[in-house]
Length: 388
Image (cartoon, rainbow, N blue to C red; front, top):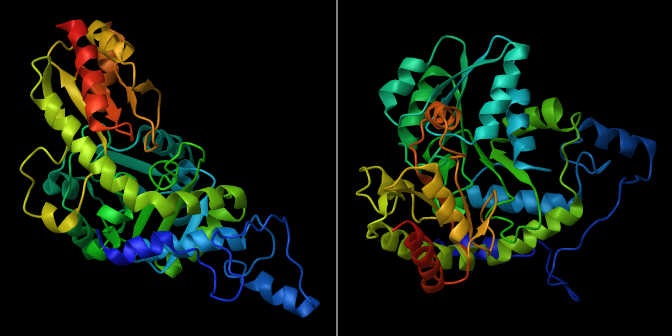
């Protein structure tokens, strides 16, 4: 882990001086006043840089944005009231009717739902669930304006060659964007590999305590300014100053949490890989990675999935319901461990839903928290004993 990143996470963003607080102040205000009408007019002319109304900029939120931009090695950042607000802002801020998007690798379900919704407004898309660059290239067309990916991808956690994707997009004048929530800026920096935009569901590891919903987009100043005026300021998907403060607090423990979660996640994954009731574990740290992976990722998160040898919905239900320490719920990235499954039953409709998503039967996803690898593997062992 880069020591500079650790320092950035811990820094309070406050100028040194006597009586300096150790925590960033919350600027709880709806508006900001100026000494003259001319001064206010100047601020309104560049509202992406000056606080006028908290629907635009707020000093507490700006501390967070500067910190996230620095961690991702980007020029600018905009924070949002949710991860989906951040995704929506990228689409609405950069795309127009007639444009085309390619989604590469397994992508977060609601992101694809939003893309489906945008077809009503003349923005089309193609989904490429494989990781072969040739498949991606074949999906590109003359109207493609955006390549959106995740690496590791949702549910199956397969990785793609980000530098190659960025080069492909750059060669065709296509913006490249990635959801980097799984790796966090500590384990992967896509902008340094040539990507144009990085998005985070800050609800997950960046917040880290399941007490805030937020999102962020990092990239070059020009694109972020366009997103600010075309998709943020008028849509109102703002991050509340108190929520920004919670994220700043979460970032201060992010390096310690990710080190612990990485170690415990790998330990749990290895234990599951040796269990007779488990057919396969989907964790990028358990396979011999492709040549590009070593320079692309420097660590692993604690969210991964495994496939049961008995792929029935009944077996999935018994294992998930049999867990005592893992809680059952959506999302991930908090201090508590979680489990869920995309498999909702054994009927034809449930099986077809998994097939449409390109997911195997018997899949269970877990998020490893801070309870300790020993306690978590013991909990999984006793739950899996229920289908032995």
